[in-house]
Amino acid sequence: MDGHGQSDEAASKAWRGAASGVVSAPVARVWELVSSTSRLREWMPMVESCTAVAGDEDVPGYVRLVRGGLMFPQQQQGSSWVRERLVAMDHTARSYTYLMEDGNVGLAGSRNTISLLDYGGGATLVVWSFEMEPVDDANQDALLDYLRILYKSCIDTIPPCLL
Image 1 (tube, rainbow, N blue to C red):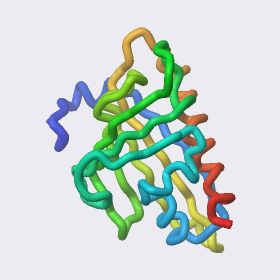
Image 2 (image 1 turned 90 degrees about the vertical axis):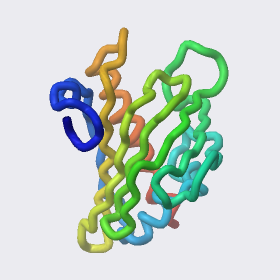
Image 3 (image 1 turned 45 degrees about the horizontal axis):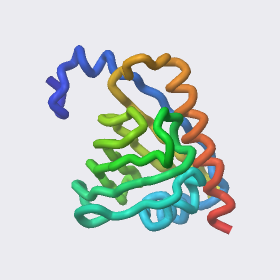
Image 4 (image 1 turned 90 degrees about the horizontal axis):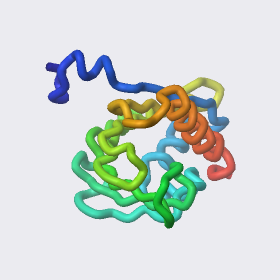
């Protein structure tokens, strides 16, 4: 078993992907934006609202409810929603991980990590990695490509938010 209660075999079957991009702004300034739940809508255009449900924002165990019109393709009418739990927050390393606990987008159990690295010259490398159990009736390559494109579009939205 690994440290998260998964067997090594189950972890090896997980679907994984990542999106990244360089933002022309200092890492501390980018971290201030991306680590704040209250500013999520600024750099994630598909998010309509983000509401605290339980806990303190910077403390593992914090739960937020994220709603959006076009977050993920779905069969139901209305907006998408995901309840996320913060599982790790490291202000020194400028990284945090959250778990999608529930929602109507079919990605419950997905783990997402956003990490920032000083890229030099006042720029920041943003890496958004994700891992999920295989999704029934989904094409792995198509879903991972969709998530990479979606998350990359969020990363690309960061610079105008910092002007």
